[in-house]
Length: 224
Image 1: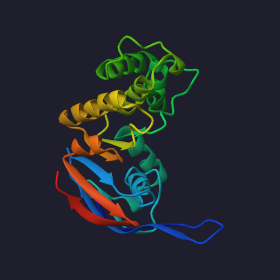
Image 2: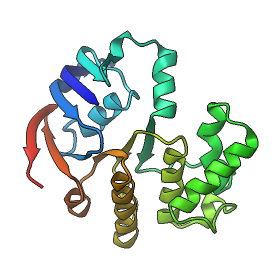
Image 3: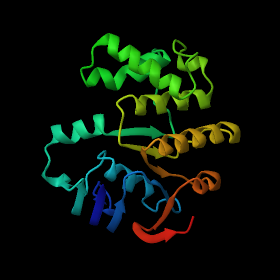
Image 4: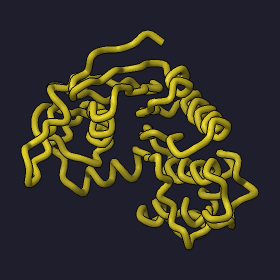
């Protein structure tokens, strides 16, 4: 499904260039629950962002279902991000003045889905994450765990093939963290590929595959 070969990424700002990824070789199969671990600054989030097409890379090859990403136009990349990938972050990135269902509708609006269909699909997504009774609540009226479930519903609403989760429980207590990992595991059991970055030992245990990265290099798989 996803294959990276000798992928490198260097950030070049005003200071000294910093190479965040160094010759990454990684294959992700459909249906995996892959967790990327490593110390702070190892390149975990950069790798997730590159695979999720949120960031570019400088060298190497990245293929998605046999298509070379470097050959695709920006419009095609945006379409993949919108329709095939879903994103969940440590910070929920909900729009404060929109209700739960309106937040979930946002990507459907970008996809040009009619209003009635947006509302129906968003309600179904919220029901799927256990928030069918919170459709019209503002983010400020929801707990941190509920806000993250809204963010997961938003990631789900376009029926993605892959969900990218970057420290999805980083801002949550242990009880809500457990609910989020149970939800991600259930979605994976439903056939969605999950790529997650985490420091949490509890979350790591739920993965079907664990990859360790250090200093921008893949050190290898860790037995689950």
